Image (cartoon, rainbow, N blue to C red; front, side, top):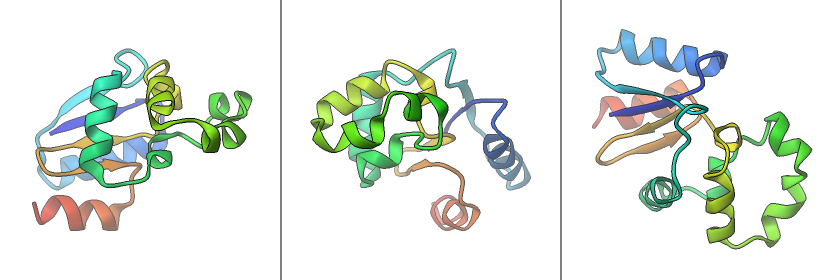
Amino acid sequence: MLFVEYPKCTTCQKAKKWLDENGFEYTDRHIKEQNPTYNELKSWYAQSGMPLKKFFNTSGLLYKSMGLKDKLPVMSEEEQLKLLATDGMLVKRPIIVTDTVVLTGFREKEWAEKLLAD
């Protein structure tokens, strides 16, 4: 299991604590130091079944300063994936990647349903 996080993010800290409390083993990855690549994002997006917008950190300062709320609807999926691959601070976090599950953001109920059942 891959756990992609920004260590200063309180949501990431809560998610990490939850993983530890539930006995999960994972590889920890700092999203700013090792931004997900275009190919990783493309693969995770395809595996997740989620809308691509769910991969964007819509509450982040960079997202807002770039005016992405208005730009994303007119961008192709490929353009959006390439943009996400340019800066980890654009990417919703934390991200969990297993062989069967990709989750963005931490919602305990969803994580419990998807990961404890896996």
